[in-house]
Image (cartoon, rainbow, N blue to C red; front, side):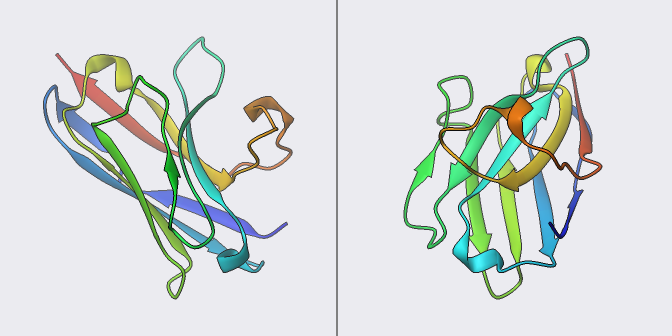
Length: 121
């Protein structure tokens, strides 16, 4: 199933920005749609963004649309999440994974360690 290593999280004030990275290894990265997910304390993991294998199409829930941008570099086997205008409610551990539109986050059987994002008010 390979490996996913997320990085780039940290503590930021509301209104600030962060750029997360996720390095993939052990499988054919360029053939998979990829997604970002997050899990806040006491809440279920939720979908944040997705990008098709070619990078041609992206998807976002309304909660982050216009503020977050997902991108990928297939040569580097890396997917990114640019987060702008951060809000305290964006505080969570952020994870990347292969993206399956018909699968809910709790149906995935592997997750990386994630990266913590904390937004102070």
